[in-house]
Image 1 (cartoon, one colour):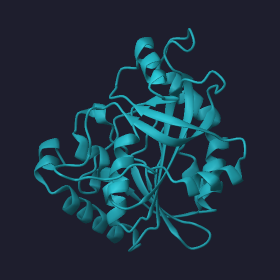
Image 2 (cartoon, rainbow, N blue to C red):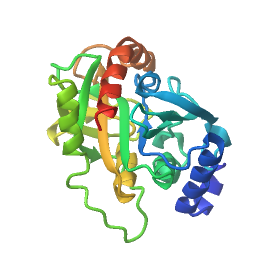
Image 3 (cartoon, rainbow, N blue to C red):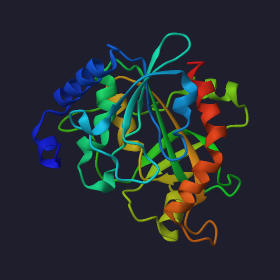
Image 4 (cartoon, rainbow, N blue to C red):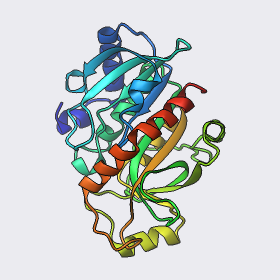
Length: 272
């Protein structure tokens, strides 16, 4: 579906159509947990439970194939050992792709239309804390939206005071007591932040910087879902170290940490 078509369609009706298509293709009428797997987190889908079906994202109303290396182009239905169903969204649309905010949050809204009550959002990000080397998972406790936009349209007022679930963060620390938490700031991308922008982000309270998650989290809260966010520090943010930044560094850090953080996320999911 083109950007113009996405903008012309009612985003919630489009999400219902997408959820209907997923139910038809997977044979699963309702899912309980939704997951958006960012850079480094893809292996978790294999550990959460038994895959039931895989759907090509480009065939689902409102979705398109991913354009970013490290992201898969499928939507998977997974049966968790206790019988619940997880909807794993491997096709993430980023704000910098220019497809509009509706496209960015379409996956989250589709998950809500599919019955999902708990939304798990993951990402690879830059770290501002020198004590968090690449490969460190960090719980998201709050966010700063630096995109200058919102997925909410019109007079739609939503309280974000407790957006990132304290309940699930407590469960995560039961699985791994060493987990730290921090504030995630979303920039627009696709360029990396400058050292001055990173200093600004640190000054206003950010611990992590990246190009995803925040708009999805707002849409998930609007849909009434409980939200859990977790980042993988894939690199030190600009100016924190003298190393140059590259997407290949992000991919490499994700691959190295992948097995460990996938086990961590699967452990959290199975305790929800």
